[in-house]
Length: 338
Image (cartoon, rainbow, N blue to C red):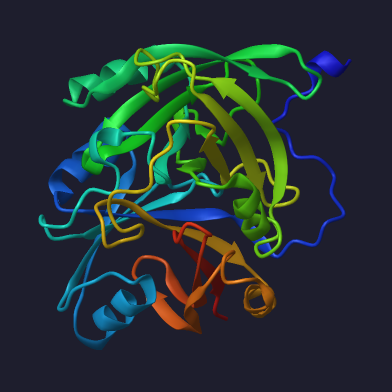
């Protein structure tokens, strides 16, 4: 029956896969202790720390466009045992770096947050609050449409992580979760990351035409106003898209465009500002993506780091490059070295 269609499930696709799923979200923070208390203490991820110095630190700074000189302090959060869980990377930023999204204001373009699949959302919400972290609207339920037009409810909590990053706990009840869940913890690793864009049609030229992602779902919803998780003005219409690597069911992107009340980013987009500053995708076709990017108009993407050998602590050696979205957000493509 059509009413049983789950829009999160992968569908057969004959599309060529250029870009695989999202594997890491990198953010800059001036408070690694608070960051560790949130992702490890409240959400139960495993932390690994590294310090780079000398040429290796400078190479990573240049590759990620992470301003400054000297050592790079890096913290990585993972969910061992869940192969598809996205990694959270954190680089230590100077306290003078501006916030990418002051007060988590959802009117600005740029990266917004990450989402975790959860079972027993109310219990996890209590754990997050017990660690001293607030939420935007407590535990809420939002209706989402299936492809056939029928509706189902998703339970969400919008937690305020350090550096004004929105972290969602998502409970889809008896529907397929947004990613794999550790049965011992009733929570998975990050399964998607979200962004607000100034022009969704132009963004689609990048996500589809350059990265080869597929648009799995698109609709428009209306904001509940200041009481909702996004705290947008009442009646704001938001175009909502989900972009997946063909054939995948997690490690995806949520891309939104405000139909009114939108504002340009107040601070530089990327790791020059505190908050989410880089997305990383796995690929086995780095050179093909580089060629697609070189053919694209500069209003769609720019190559800011040409394909090169790079070593990222706690991950290993890669051939990698960095492109930008139309709004200038950096996207890293990683091909594992053999």
